[in-house]
Length: 107
Image (tube, rainbow, N blue to C red; front, side):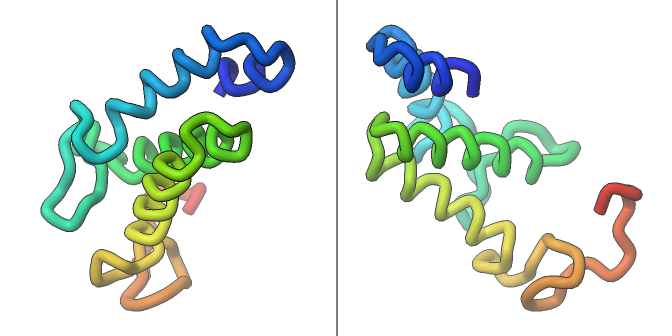
């Protein structure tokens, strides 16, 4: 995220290149594994936090003009999965078959 902000402030291509290199690993064809339904799966513990954070960075990058179409599509795919495109919603109280007993207080 910091590199997106530095790119916005300075317009220096080194920052946009770094952001795009990071997100390239997360987008389809990158090194971050995916589930059969398309969720990026960095770690089994709290996997949605990684997907949501990468989606946030991708949206900020897209808004800043860094590979806008690919980053926006990636972010939308992850957010839509979290909200229910995978068959159930993972957001408490939202969408189809959401969690009823959240494990963490923050939920």
